[in-house]
Image 1 (spheres, rainbow, N blue to C red):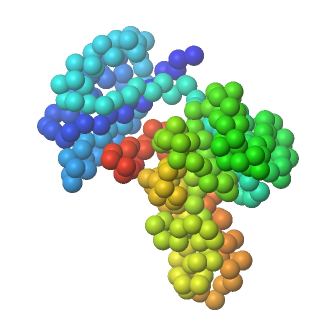
Image 2 (tube, rainbow, N blue to C red; image 1 turned 30 degrees about the vertical axis):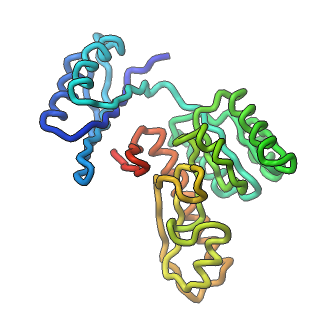
Length: 283
């Protein structure tokens, strides 16, 4: 079902007249702009724009595409038109800890995430009751089968549920390069540390032993390099260096909740732009 709201995203080499060309085409094709965000990355001369607009009765996507394509070709634009009624299907992958999972489910329940959660997938049974609580299907995969066989099962589930995006909500398994390439820029991971510092296992322990004064969390796209994917969202909290590791961890989990939710929200709202392995947030 089509909605009356659309989001247009555009990237292209920076040049004069881009804003006028885009907004003029939206208006001429029957769109009334509700919000507009644009940014130029001057170091790479890259123009980025996100426009959300209301479709008037005369607007059709076919008409818009016909009118916009010559503009896009002339300015060498990469662009997408998103119908905001079409919700992405998101799979949540978890292991044993529940704080990030609960945050996503509760925010979704409060209509703060524009998506559907058809399934929760885990390598343990610990969080099956959470899935039941929110009336979401729960599927278990078995890492003991070996990573390739386990990922084949995972891929089959993602296909069966027609998944568009995968969120790793403290899923404590390393994904293979083949899997992350297949799902490039469609797997969002939460790292319980402020990247690029404290990569790998037990970042809070690493931070505690260094006597840090701030701890944080990072949500990023998963890729073949562990904890090295393009960053979407980060946050930090100041800590007293007399705190215990357990207290560090508790504070860090609060940051993880916020950061993962914000990263998924930005992705769903088409606010994440990627250029050369670098992310830009627009609107």
